[in-house]
Image (tube, rainbow, N blue to C red; front, side, top):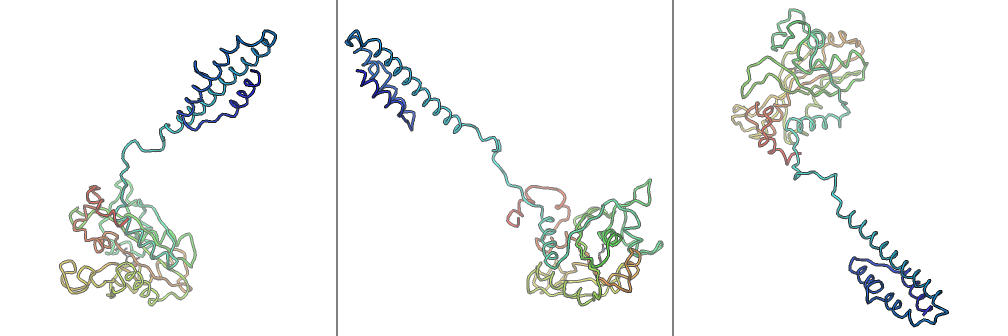
Amino acid sequence: MLEKIEQLISEISELKASSAEELEALRLKYLSKKGAINDLMADFRNVPAEQKREVGQRLNVLKQMAQDKISALKESFDAMKAQAEKPDMTRSAYPVELGTRHPLNIVKNEIIEIFSRLGFVLADGPEVEDDWHVFSAMNFAEDHPARDMQDTFFVEAHPDIILRTHTSSVQSRVMEVSQPPIRIICPGRVYRNEAISYRAHCFFHQVEALYVAKDVSFTDLKQVLLYFAQQMFGADTKIRLRPSYFPFTEPSAEMDISCNICGGKGCPFCKGTGWVEILGCGMVHPNVLELNGINSKEYTGYALGMGIERITNLKYQVKDLRMFSENDVRFLKEFEAAN
Ligand code: DAH
């Protein structure tokens, strides 16, 4: 009998169970009424009197350790089960809807990407600006009629404080604190006091680029413009430059690209001309360099500025400017694929 008890003790101490069913089978085998331990208990009365003490003790040890073992196994199962059933607190309570990037941001990022391949780095400045950075430092004379080209929002109590009308103010912000070589790209929001319609808004977005260094020429500008146009609108895109006027550049030009909607054949978008204007540019006026602390005898530069809405319209043919700021999810969802 003692031998049997010892054998069971060592057998039970080795027990393992890999499922709840297995564990229950073990419990039945050892601990139930008809189990192995109860059978031994029943045999106990046949143990000779002089051995009863020792056998009884070992039997109790066996029973106790079997109970301990089975409950230890059960506990480890329960813990595993609880772990498996534990809710995942990182999951959203609702089905996850993926957002979409705003079309203006998609296009802005693309423009930044193209210029950053040419070594341009991001810069920015405040939207609430002072007259100096928006106009004076950009060579708009005090009574210059060019100031009327843009309908400015003024802060009533502080006529010197305005909402910037163009991102060209960032040119000045950067030049006043750095020396050439300067190669920056500045995307941002600008404001003009215009009646809101399908083709005008009181705020919109621009990207400005500025390069100032030694011996920068108009040829450099032209190459960058061509590179940008072809990266943005496709390798077949043609560009043409028309003379223009901006106070902060001399000479100044406007750039057209071959209409990428009709491929240059003529359509309502390009008003039948096959060309669409997309940006203004020119060689930085020496006055602008000097006004911002850069020696115009030593350095030259080019600058360009474009409206992001216009580029976006060309790429995606959004007919109504107001859609960009209405945040209609049906409109935004249309750009899911472009994300
Ligand atoms: N600031 C001009 C505008 O808002 C755009 C522009 C034209 C920017 C020529 C430039 C430039 O940097 O060289 O219409």
